[in-house]
Every structure is written in structure tokens, then in C-alpha cells.
Length: 423
Image (cartoon, rainbow, N blue to C red):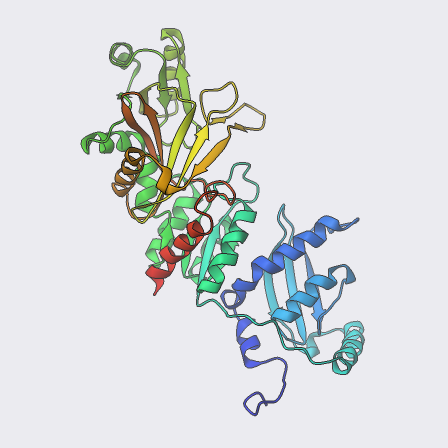
């Protein structure tokens, strides 16, 4: 019938789209957005995961009529079942097509009424869309209080990437087994070697998928001892840095660095695992505590500035530059407080053309030593020059912050990075 130009539901395209999750992943950000807006407004919202059946655009639960209408606009199929997973961000786990024979007696009557309403209304073509050629899985934890990208940012990226041919869908730590359903992976959780983020990166690499962050970048960036040696070997200016292997190294730290001195565990991130010693007593105490958990710790010259420069680098070129100010009454940009919410300092983001050349050069040179992925290089500027503090994989990329100067060009370049490697 479709080949003869007749109007028919479902179309062959719709059947194919609903046959596999990867074929309809492009629609999930918009569908989940309206799902969560509906749930937030309900006086008596669902408390657990549930299934919703949609009969010719009519929801089995009338509270979800707008979701049913939008879903039917995307996929013109007579009977659709949606599995919804309860979480801080309600997720659509599955969309599947059902046959009319799958309906029970009560639903069969509802379907008859829905069919009469549908037949008697003016035929409206389904929502016009271009299905993205490729699919990108974004590993994200909605419960993380300090994620590198929040859900609204990921949705913003999806709106830009999908017309370019890159569909975007969030996945969680339990989705490793189905990672191969996607074409590429972007990790938006704080990475570590002994963590599911590293296992995702390894699996993506094994599958031949473009991945940010790749396993080598995670290994290099989470090892601050390696980073310190790498930067020094390549004549990149850094604060004075020494490795502490035992308490016997402390007198040397006093002599060669002095106080205050910053102590870091090798695999800390975003101000975590970073302490400051102001005298020998605090140096002894902190070093003893940190060496109990790590074979090596790093001692680094303390360099206070009102803000740190963050140079975002993608594929060996500057992507954004921000200034992260120190948290109020604290010496770091994030103040982690035991049992309390972390406090962050303010920020400003500059157009790349207005960034001092020495800052840009130091950031780009440092990131290129790690790889061709996405990195955030932390830099301090003092009277005697530019100092690179560290290179981070998995840098923060939040809509309205890091894209505050370059705008959507940031997201377009990110999408192009994946697409260039998929074509």
C-alpha cells in the first residue's frame, strides 16, 4: 500500500524504527523531557517504574496524554508500549510495538473507540524529521551532585548534534552489556581506573567506537605522578613538584618546596584528594593519612591566585577558556565539606581571541602530550610566567558556563569530532 502511495500505518519505516532501540534513540531526549515535565506537575506522581500503552495516540493513563500524543507523532503505530524507569530523571527504557491481538478485553474496547476517533479526524502527517545516521551513548549518572555535564546540557547538545546526523542518548553504569548497540561513546561521569567509567572506555575501544575519554587518556590524566614527569620532560612550566614515597621524604619537601605545600593523591579529581599543609605538623599528619591509602603522593608548590585558567582542548585545538574563581573563604575552586554540599567558586568564560597567547599555548601544548580527545588544562598565571597545574580528562562542559563565549560552536565542534571518526 505504501509503495502505491496510499496512506498506511504503520509504515515500513516506523516498523524498522521500533524494532531496535538504537533506531529510535534520536527521539528519546525530547520524549523524556516531556515525560519528566509531566511527572513534576502531577499531584500524585507514580512512585515506581511503570508501563504505558498508547492506542492510536491515546494513553492508557490519561495523565500522560501529551506524552502519548508526541510519541504517536514520532511513531505512527496503532499500539505502542512504553516502559518507564523511575529515577531522579525518569527514563524511557523501552518502546515496543504490539499487535492488536496483544490487547486484553478492556483494552480492545478502548482501541475500538480510539480507532473511530482517529478515522473521523483529519489525517495529519507524522512529525517531519531526519533520523540521525549515527548514535552516541552518553554515560551519565543523574545522582552525581557535581557531574561534568548535567542533563540539561546533554539535551542541549542533543538538539545540536541530531540535525548533524548524530543521535544522542544517555546510558547508565548498568548498560555496559548493550554498549555495542551504539556507534560512539562520550563519558560524562568522573573517570577513574578502578571504576565502571574505565570499563566503558575499554569496551568502546575494543568495539572500535570513537570514545571520549579513551582508556589511555584516563590512565595518563588520573596519574598525577605521570603528569608531573611528562610536563617537566617536555619543558612545560609547572609549580615545583616532588614525589613522596615515605615519611622519610618530608625533610626534603621542607627544604626544596617549603610552606605552604599542596599534597595530592595520584588519582584525585576536581579538588578531591588535594590537601594543603601550612607547617611541619600538618605536613606530617596529612602525609601519614594519605600514604595509608596510596603508595605515592605528590607534593607541589602552593601558588595562590584569585582564579585558575581552564583551557578546554579538543583534538589538539583550543575549544573554550574559562576562569574558575576560588570558592569563598577557601583556596580551591571547589570546597568539599564532610557531610555537606560542596561549594564552588564563580566563573567567567572568554572568547578565544581575547585569551593571552601564553595561556592558550601552554594549554594546547600540554593537552597534545596526552592525546587527541577532550581535555581541561588548569593553569595559574603569576608575575614570573605561566604554570600548568595539571591536565584533566573528562573536563566540565556545562551549557551556559564553558560555552558562554564561543556559544554553540563548542557543541558543533564536539559533534564533528565524533562524526569525522564515524564516517
